[in-house]
Length: 345
Image (cartoon, rainbow, N blue to C red; front, side, top):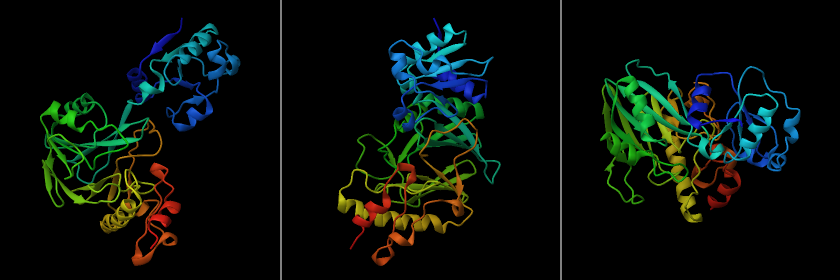
């Protein structure tokens, strides 16, 4: 019988850059939706379900390192690992498959102008969710946590920080927020923009409010559009955490949970918010809450200087009064067609 490997162990191997071949045996459609960064793909799912190697009969994998087989839930990949083991290959099946992998994570440190302030980007790799641990003078804040509390607690302890505040940029519709649990676990203050969308206690953070973390000052700025309550956070005037308002390759979609008129109003608000963000200057560092693809174990932060942002509003979709909205690649949003419709006079 082939051995198995759990998500955390595989995550650690990839994070440590240990030699390992991740073999994705799912069908083409499932693979296209998302995958483990660096994995290789062989569409062997149907054959394996029938107990045959199929395309794995002649597959060549690097020698001298383990092969981890992956499917959706970890059952067919076990068959693949067994059959590969019969060929003398050190094969292991990922327990729980891609379903379990959805909570895998990695980190990258974000270079910052002030060496006394450190920013750790914590990435839920499979879903492209980005959160941030910011530390200075022994204290820390977490922005947009999407992983279990122990991930942030372990990282904070490693750096000698105590988490004082947990902040959300908005009430997320597209990722699992862990803010409430993390605040409860650490005794930190839970800060959310004012809204009526949640039904548990939190401290409101309004436009212009400042949050101090040692020598770091985080200033809240209301940037509606993706959602009505969306708020960005400016760190010492050098970096801005934009949530789902602005990405490195596009902008936030204004149509989630909104009808046509609501989308129209949000789109106009989004344009105003983007104009303010752009006014921060070309060298401001943009740190978003999402990426549209699985995040590699490369230690490279997902960020961009304002002048390098892709997907700004374009003139060809401008409408009356100068209102326009650009493309949101990060959410695969068909902005040009939809926004011509909802922003038309």
